[in-house]
Each structure stands twice: as C-alpha cells, then as structure tokens.
Image 1: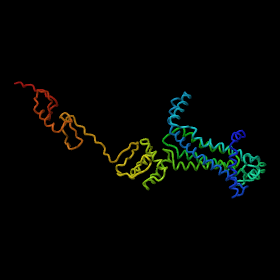
Image 2 (image 1 turned 60 degrees about the vertical axis):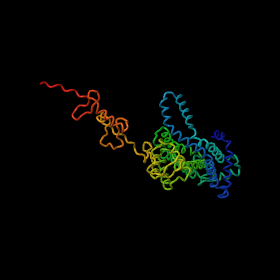
Image 3 (image 1 turned 90 degrees about the vertical axis):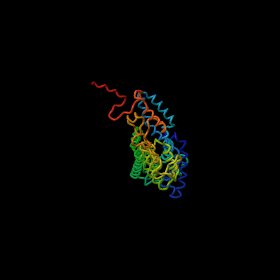
Image 4 (image 1 turned 90 degrees about the horizontal axis):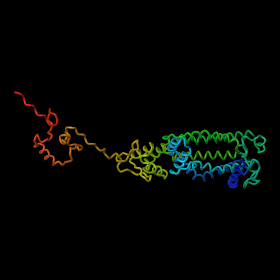
Length: 426
C-alpha cells in the first residue's frame, strides 16, 4: 500500500488541505478535537469530490446506455468470429468507432475518484502512525488522534490489536462494533444500488450477457467491500460509506427522472408524465420536453411503453410535437395514434374500399353493372365514357351470326358459338 500511496502523493497535500479547511469550520461548532468535527470534514470532502464528478457521471450514464443498445450487435460479432479472436476484437473496435461509444466511459467516475481515496487513506494512515502529512502539522495530528466516532478513533481498524487501540484511547470492543456496523452498511448500500439498477433500470426487451455481468457484480461488490473493509481505518470507512450513500441517492434520482428506455422505470415515469401532461395540458419542465422529443424522434422504433404514452395523449386530445412540447389537437378524432406494432393510424381518414370482383359472366358481357349499380365501387369492363356505351351495344345487336362475334349466352345454352343442329331424317 505504501507503493500505491507514493504514486498518489501529488494529491495528498490538496486532500489534507481541504480536510483542514472543513475542520476549521466544524471545529468552531462542535469543538476542534471532537469526532464530529473530523468526521464531518471527511463527509464534506466526499460531497465536494462527487459534485465535481457529476459531469463524468452524466457521461457514464450515456456510455452505459450506449453499451446496452450495442449488446445485440456485439453478440452477433462474437458468434460470427468465434474462432478468430483477433478479427473479433477488430470488429468490436470498428463498432465502437462507428457508434462513438467507449467501454471505459462507464468506469470514469470510479477511476477519477481513486486518487482521492488513496490520498485520504494515506493521510489517515499517517494519523494512525503519528506522522504529519501534507498540511497536517503536529497540533492537528494530536487533535485528529483524539477524535472518536461513536467511541472508535478515526485511525483505528477492525484488525488492530488491543494494545494499538488502547494507545489511541479506545477499547477493542468499541472499535470492532463500530467498524462492523459501518462495513455492513457499506456493503448493503452497494448491494441495493446494484439491485436497483438491475430490477428497475434495465431494458427488459433485450436479454444480453451484459445483464448477466451486472447481476454477478451485484453480489461480488458487497463481498469485496466486506473483505477489504476490515483493513480500512474508521475514517476511510466514513469516506466510503458516504460515497455509497451518495451514489445510491444519485442513481435513484436518475432512475426516477431519466430512466433507461424499455425498463420498468420508464413505464412508471411515462405513466406519471401522462397524468401530469393531461392535467396541465402542457409540459412544464425542460427534462419532460427532452424525453418527449426523444420519443417523437423515434417514430416506428418506439417501444411498447412509448406507444402507449403517445396514444394516451391523443385520446386526451393532445399532440406531441417534434420539439418536445405538447399542444391541443383541433380534432381529437383525427389525432394520430400508434398501433401495437408501431404503425401510425389516423382516426379521420376512412379505409380505402376495394372494388367488388365481377363474376366471369359479367366480364364476358362487356361490364354489365351488377344489381347494386349505385355503389361507387362498381366498375365497368372498360374505361369508356357512358355516351359511348349505347353505340357499342347497337353494334353488337346488328352483327351477323357468321361474323365471328361472340353472342350473349342465353339461358339454358352453352357459352360461345353454338354447333348447328344436324338435319332430321325423314
């Protein structure tokens, strides 16, 4: 750990300076040697770091969703180039380049937070060993060693011996009880964060290996925190527990207001948005307009929840616009709706009627109109005007029997030219 700490020594001084500044503020309220002053200084450091990491968190969300949409294509590439790993990697990189995604973007907040974590661990480890680090001088060092959180010193660990804990002015029982509770809370918050992501904010229409990986991490991460937590000082446990609680709350906010398309969270969000928009007749927040704009842009590619949302607006006499706004529809009956298969339908436009098919005798008779000739769907055999039809009929009646013209079939006779009867013998 000393080697890792030395690699991040360049950030140790800034971290210790931030802690000292917060301690000077909280020390005036709770006292400079209290655990509240030093504990709240660490919590404030976490909040400051996480606020600075919000832009990276937004990129992480976009990268994670982009990776989720690419999972079907990635699976096809893996199956196509099963035996050629090099070609598989090349096709994967090509897919990332074409779509503008980066698998490492989902790890940016963790990677950016790691230097602060190791710097804080180095500072607290120095307090435990009685060494001044960064801007923490001998006076601040003595004050930090006196600070206890619920009876446990900031620099104490679960694995410390009773003599070492006694040197910090505490008992081994207090230290192990406090650290055990904090480790359990830390692991539970991590498990709940991953479970919330898997059960509410995952597209249920696509089954990919990515979901299996997330499900595995849901159980692996809490175990890792429990194993490594027994070697962390109390101050680092405070830092990590605060980070997990912040992540959990931040994710709950994102799931509630900007869920993944196709997830259960999106179904619940669109249901709330439908009630809100139909009640007020318009969108009132920018985030709502952004969501509606994305749904309208998808067109036929909308999922089941998005089609239900559009149909609910149309039934209420509202129409979603391309810019994300919602306006009153002039004719609610003519409002566009979307079928379950994604095909848009219009209530005002009548269905096109197909012409009735004529029988063979009607086609041979020159397009004689059926009994319901008044119907607009009846068609004549030829596209001749009405005035020309009488003349054509007259020509047919004056034609000679032997001219080869086809006569109209009479009742009880065969169609076509008739065979002459043979003369009777007397």
